[in-house]
Amino acid sequence: MKKIQLYISLAACLGLTFASCNKSDWEDATSAHSYSESESPYLRLKSNAVVTYDLQFKEGAVAPKYIYLKDNAEIIQTQLGMTVDDMISAYTNGSILFSNINSARGVWNKADYTYGNSGWWYNSAGGVVSESEGVAYVAFDSEKKALVVSVPEQSEAGVSASATVGFVNADYSDYARFNVNIAVSNPGLITENVQIPEGDYAAFLVDFTKKETTEKIENAMGMTVKEFVKAIKEGEDIALYMVKDKKFITEYDGLTAKDDGFYTANGLGYWLDADGNRKSWGAGCQVYVESDPDGYGVNIGRYPGVASGTKQVIDFAYVSLTDESKFIEFIITATFE
Image 1: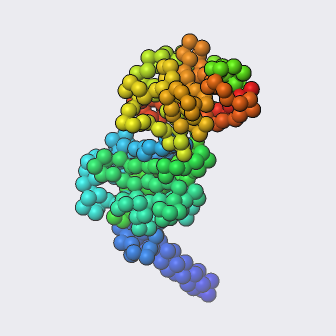
Image 2: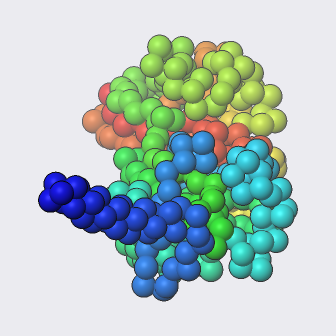
Image 3: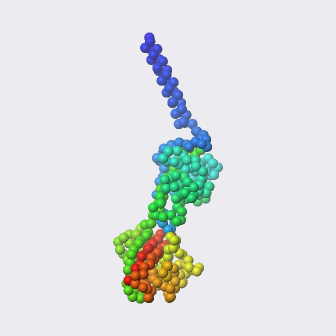
């Protein structure tokens, strides 16, 4: 009899314990929870609600990149039950939130915006920071119906960050999540030390057909060397710009690459002084940079009377006029023999 009573008591205790736990779990799983301002909502893991973007920015030619929501309409429809336009309307009325995610902690980060009124700056560790500390930002542009991603204009190769954001309903149960990996690189940079032979107007040809140079041109410009050389010869979509402080010099006295008089040497080319400033041929010139399509390269040559042993660094780039993110930059250290 005592054994029966003991079993009944034990079963009752266990029943109360499980009932207590199961009731809480059941409520969490089935009831919408209203989070306070101080709470960090739990991130429910949904592998089919995640899309990842790897975005590369080019040192010296930074331009914002856009992740268009129309390209992710299926995941938005599947996870939120809305079209892109419906989701943007819901965002406008507050029933859909655009929120940052702390992946390491597995929670939604309700940090205030630090980029404009719809985005955040991130440090290299992916933490939300102020603009002065940030290396990259992600924001939502409702008019463009896109996420906008960029880095500061003067960012150098090697900078990287990861950001995770999402559109989520008010109880943080359903969402579309975007993992954005950001990096700054310079695949379009060629550096070379050259010797300019003795003699007035003598030049060294920087050869586009060298294996490493060819690979970089093709990767940076999205065309073969043959196509690249043809584009230089035609001058319709390719400009030659000098580079100062990591910026292309695209205008001289109101002239642009499409105007007569922009270039001061043959074809796409310049005469330069000792500081690399553009000049017309004559007194004060020291070196010229002159495209040589027939030689499949660019000549670095000397003005008469330059002393042997003189050194000069020449920084220039071939840039697509229709897409400035496509460029190949040359930093040439020239020694005059």
